[in-house]
Image (cartoon, rainbow, N blue to C red; front, side):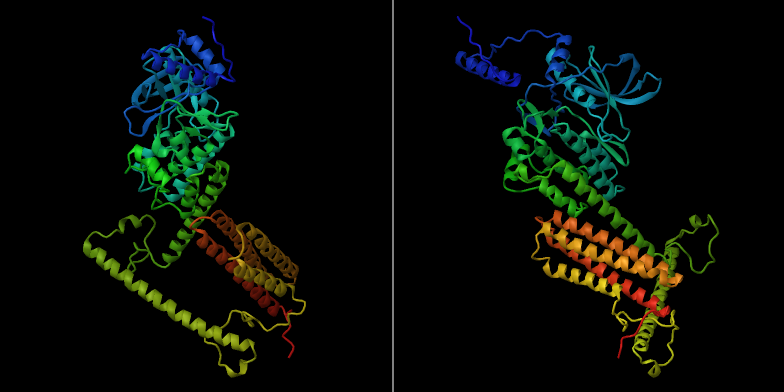
Length: 591
C-alpha cells in the first residue's frame, strides 16, 4: 500500500493531526488501541528533545478540588543545570505535588556555603513523565527577577530532583491566614504590587503563567513575596495565544475565554492576577468558595464578579473590576497595572501618615497611661504604672475624663477670645482704631492685614497671579462636569503655570522683606508645591476611574485639592501683605 505523506508548518500541528487521524481509526475499528507508533525514549533523548522543542510542562496538585481536567498540549522545555545529589541533605516533607513529594533540605554550594532549599521529587521516572517533570526547571532557569522564585539546579539522574530556594515563611495563603490580625493594608497592597512586577517581567518574555494564586506565591520576608510554581506556564513566543489540551487547571481563577475555549494569553493572566489580589485582600480566602467548579462560568457570563473585600481600597477594587472585563481587549496590561497599583500603594502610605499625625495631635495633651496626681515618672517607670485592679482602672479613667473636659473647656474659651480679638483687629485695619478699646490679647504684629487688605494693587504681581490662579480653579470647578478625562490635564497645566508665576513673583520681592518673615513665606511656597503635587495625583486618579463607580468621588477629591491650592495661595498673599506692611512697602488704597 502506498504511503501518504503530509507536510505541515510545525510539530504541534502535526501532532494534532496525528491524534485526530488516530481517533477516527479507533472509532472505525471500535478499538481503544492507538495506531500511533511511539519509539522508546532514553533519558538522553528526552533531554535533547526538550532542548530542541523549548516547551513547558504541566504541574498540578492531586486530590484537590481547585484543579479539574482541561485540554493541554505536549510540553516544551529544558536546559541542563545539573548539581550533585551528594551536596543536598533532605529534611522533612513539605507537601505532595502531582509528580511526588516536596522536601525541605540543605544544599552545600561550591564555595562551602549552605542554603535552605526546597526539593521536588518525581516518583515515576518513565520517559514521558520525566519530560514533563523536568520542563518546569527550564522555565525557572531562564527567569531572573527579585520577585520570582530562584532555581538552584536540577538532578537529571533517576530519581530526578528539581532544587529551588526555600523561604522560611512558606506559602502566602497560609501566611495571610496566620497573620491577618497584624498585616496592614499597605503591606497587602505591597504584596500585590510585587507580584504584578513579576508578571510584567513574564509578559516581557512572552510567557503566560496560567496559575497565579496565593498558593503559588512564597513569602521571603514580611516585606517581600515571590511568584513560583511554573508547572502550568507556557511560552507563547510569536503566537498571540496558547491553546491547551489535557491538563488540570484552576477553574475559579480562570478567565471566561480560558474556561470556554482553552485560550491563554497575557490578558487571561491579568484576570487571574486580579483574582489573586482578591485572595490577598481577603487574607487567603479562596475565590468563589461558595460555588462548584462547573457553576463558575455561568456566574461570570451573567456579569457576577467577586465582591469587594472589606479592607480593600476602593481604587484597587476598581482596578480589579477592570481586570475582570469579559472582553480581554478591555483589560489593562501588567505594565499599566504596575503604575496604578504603585499609585494606590503611595496613597495608602500617605493616608497612614495622616492617620498617625491625627493620632499624635489627639494624644498630644494627655496620655491614657499617665497619672495626673503624681509627679512625672523617672525613666523606665512607665512599665510600673499599669492599673492593678478594676477600681484603679475606674479612678484612672475618671481623672483622665475630667482632665480632658478641662482641656477642651480651656481651648474653647481661648477660641472665643481669639475670635473677638481678630474681629477687633480687622476693624482697626479699616480705620476704626479710635472707636475700639484696647484688645484683650495683644497682637503679635503692630499692623496685621485682614484677608483682603485694602492696599494699592497697581503693579502688584503677587496679587495679580493669585487672582489668576483662583480664576483657573473656579473655571475647573465650573467646567469639570463637561470635561472629558483626557481634557483634565490641560486645565491642570494652566493651574500649574499660574502657580509658577505666583512663586516667581514672590521670589522677586523676598530680598526686600525682613529676614524674620522669609522663612514663613518660603514654607508657604513649599506648601503650595505640595498642594500642586496632590492636585496632579487626584487628577490621575480621576482619569483612571473615569468609567468606574468611583468616578464622581474622584472628581470631588480633585476639586477639593484644587480648592486647597487656591486657599493656600490666598494665605500666601496675606503673608506677603503682612510682611510688606511691616517693611513699609505697602501703599493703602487711594481714597
